[in-house]
Image (cartoon, rainbow, N blue to C red; front, side, top):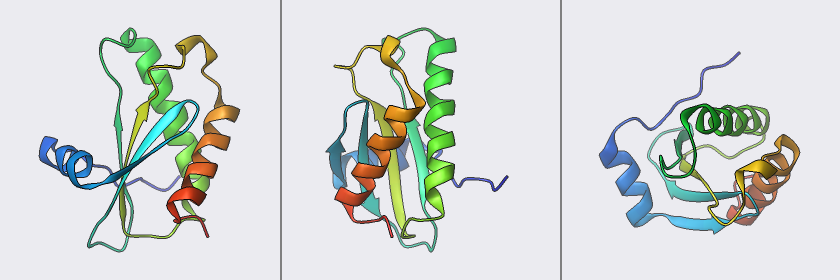
Length: 113
């Protein structure tokens, strides 16, 4: 399994939030900002107030799994931060909905080949 490049530092996340554009799907929100590298970097931000740690980690796992599946068909050179849409209840967490959300948002952003 190929390792995903990630955003790690707080200033990297703040940079994407402040300078990037955002796109809203049913279950996820994506912030997008072009970077100077020839690869995409992924960040996932799930609020502590949203749910307990076990559920937050499940959300992150599913987002990472969907991203890995779609990554081979994306244009490189973007920083992407994924956030769970707070309007959507966590009980509706579904791999299939996240997959369709992410794919449609990637088309909207223009990074899907």
